[in-house]
Image 1: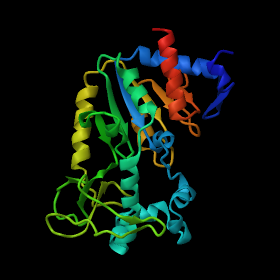
Image 2: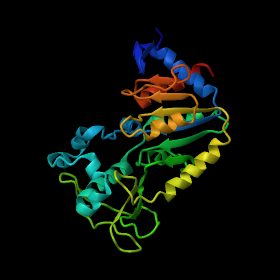
Image 3: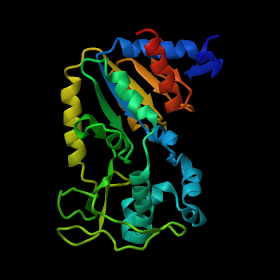
Image 4: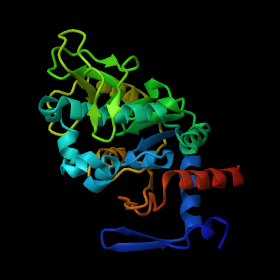
Length: 297
């Protein structure tokens, strides 16, 4: 077994009732071949993509409560806090949660995997496009241009009115938030809408959210569709997309093209002959794929 095989001897991929056993060498080489033969790479990313940067993925309420013990103390679930009702019921708690996340995302340094992905796509004639459910802005921070990204759940770096009083969306770059982290409470002034002077909120699609303004995201989809129309041999490389909120996985599968699915918990793929599922983390897998491509360059 080669160098890559020393990392993990055997990977069992369970698709329906079929079990495929392949060693890591084979899976990585198959993934490299998919990228080598593509002319455009769709980079699809869920919460697991940020884990290697040190971000929590809030997988279940236990993950949330570990990051926010005060919410756990009061048994407040992710569905309850990531909800527009939270801004009406307890705006300082809601903004304590989102304000802390905003500060964390501003401070985080994207891991090397973000840069590897750009290098992987460099030999594709049509380059890459990003589709992500993450609201953290890590791709932009890693140097990806806005017109190459769809943020399907919106962005914490943009704000809107809670009412909403208009379709206005504005950047949060001038917003300074001070949070009592121990109590998950905003202690600086509440953000306000510049038009109606009511409460502002992040421009993020939350649970049970009928007030999310989707205009910015819809424009991003338009850019994706224009890019995709040019690509003849599309490939998807998907990282850290779970099954509980499956927006990213469903989008990856909707293109009907080869998928490289990187997920330590849910590597199953829809087409076992065409697709590759790798039960590892994003950064380690991307490093191995890049090394495999360099060997055959």
